[in-house]
Image (cartoon, rainbow, N blue to C red; front, top):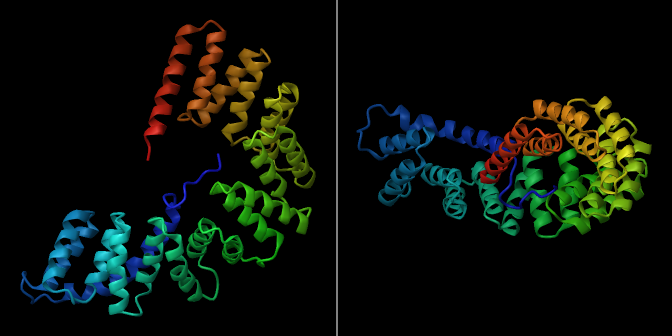
Length: 354
C-alpha cells in the first residue's frame, strides 16, 4: 500500500532531471572531439567521439567497451572519466560508476554533474550515508531548493534514521519552515511511503499538534491505521479529516473502506456515493462499491459498478475478479470464467513487472 522499496525505487522525473543536467555537460564537451575533422579515424579523439555516438544510440555495452579500451591506452583524455561514469550509471553499475565519477571530479573540480551523479549512484547502490554529504553539497549550490536533490537527500536521511535531517530536506523541497506543521506532514508521508510506520505516526501526530486544522494529517493517520487493521482508530481519523476537509473525496472512500471491513455496508455505500459525486474520475470507489453491493446481495447493481470501473481502468485485475464472482453468483458461468481468467492474466502480468 505505502511501500516504495528503498534504494531501487526512484521517480522517473528525478532520473529525467538528472539526465537533463548531465546532457548539458555532454553538449559542452561534444564540440571538441567532433570538431576536429582533420584527425585520423584512429586518433583518441575520433575513438572518443565514436564511443559517445554509440552511447547516445543506446549501445551501452559496446560504448563502454570502447571507452575502457581508450582509458587503458590514454587515461588522461579530457572528459573520458566523466563519460565512463555516466555510461556505467546508465547501465545501473553504480559503484563502478562512482569510481570514474570521482576521477572526473579530480580532473575537473567544477564538474558539478559528476558530484550529483556520484551522490545519486551511492543512493541507488544502497549506500545513503555516502550519498548524503554529496547531495548536501548539491543543495548548497542553489539559492532555492533543487527539488530532485532535496527528495533524494531526504530519503537518504530516512534510510539512515536521521528524521530531523529528512524533515529539513523536505521542508526545503516544499518551501516551508522546518519546524512547521506542514514539514512534519510531508515527512510523515515520505516515512510512510518508505515503510517507516512508527516515526510516520509520530510525525503525523506532531503535525496535528502544531496545527489541529491542517488538512490531510488525519487522512494520513487513517490510512496508516487502516493498513494496520486498526479499524476503530482508522474510522476516527477519517471522520476528523472530513470535519476539517469535507470536500475531500478520498476521505469518504477510505472511510467507506473501513466501514466495509466491519460489515457496515449501508454506511459504506452512502460514503462511496458521496465520494463518486465529488470525484467521478477515480476507479477505486466504483470497485469498492461493486464489492459492497455484492455483499448486500444487490448483484445486478454490483455488476454495473464493476463494469464502469473496468471501463475506467481495464488493466486492473481486481474489478475483473470481483465481476467474475458476481457473474458466478448470477449463474453466468461463461462470463464468470472469462472475467476470472482475465483477472488472473492481468495479475500475472503485473507480478512479472520489475
